[in-house]
Image (tube, rainbow, N blue to C red; front, side, top):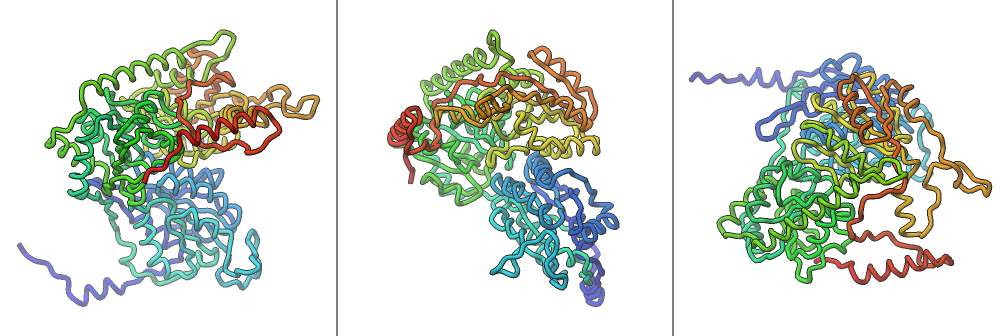
Length: 639
């Protein structure tokens, strides 16, 4: 073999060669050369940029994309919050191995992205935000759309991004990109730290030129590493599993991001441990299994809640154990309950006083399966029979309640979901985020067999669904992509239908028209005793919003934005509409008028939403007394 050496002069020349670019041009060139890799699979880390141009970025990043964006396609959106949600839908569909960048102008264009940033960081999904900022030189005086803080001359509205970003940097000079951009890529590809990354770009700095080192723009691959579990922790966990008589697994989003689906199933079935799924973890058991109990927590199945309540060991895999999962710390009632937490984030691995396994979920579950087999750890047949009976019982409830037609009533939301589930094929994907849908989907959606369900419930952000569906479609060119929304969510953000039309991206929006924020009305009835201000009604003679439902034509609205539309009033009509939409091109919207006050059965789990401590209303006072009683009886902390 002949060894080829680079001469000192050649190396020095390569390292000192420069390329004079503006800050905007440098960002575009750099991003086009970044890749991520996991398990030998390599892809572009940021394959496109979303944006809306204004005076803050049109001459900077806008000029750069027009001149040098051949390898970094630009996608026009209608709303800055929406474009962040589109990037999050893409990142979720890519299991965090890739995301999109988002550019905005200064002022309201920038702050519109703050909600998207919070959604990203809370759900631990990567997104790169490039909001424009005030002039760094300050020669211009107070500029349009910017803040004058009386005590902090360097403050701008972009400082709102700081608490909702995993990494924030204001780039005040061109050469700061040499450290800011690599750090941004590191955070985006770190499973522990990932979330919103914000590089705040003063509008004049975006146009400034600098002689950047050429090697700064060479292709770079950021490896997403899998952290192996500590052998001592695995041994400790195995001993707890072997002693347990009623263990349960709570599977969260970390199972998806680790792509640990086969390992979860192998562990659950080999040891005989039932699995409940969080909102982010829905579909973690990708194939049907006798160990799958469906959704857990406040909006799951009664089966999952009852078995979790009596569990003596809870194994949390890739979940941060939020209040919906723990029933506000009321769900786990076994007096001697213990916890094992598998999580790549140390803070989450130590919650509930758990035995922490700080590791990649795939590697940790595989290690536990091997160790449990060696220790002959397996639940007894009586417990496994109990699991099977509980599954059959819940299945019967689902068939009775979700499939039932109620005389004189419109289609229920449960019927809508079951019909869509029946029609969905392998490779199809449903996205939902807020209102009544996430809870009902947790109860009845069958995510096995490749019928994926992406639920954003860490932030429960209304308006996420439609743009996120566009992002998911960008990542998944085959199969159907459905945005499942209520009328309240739809009214907050229908404009991205135009983006889908413009980009020729096929998404199907299934809209449940139930005349308002009905799930909050239901919560209001349970915490106040009366409903107020949640339905879409006109004012009555007394001046209250208790008149007739508003006659809103959602089909006409969607059609005006370029969508094909259908109306469905029965399950059969919905099936026909879904079949026709599957063969259509471009954005589709199916409007289903559903019964406003028909809900699926509750789980019996408690959620700590406080009732007014004092009230002259007897109904509210009675609810407060009941709330205090349940808090005393159920809520407990685990250390």
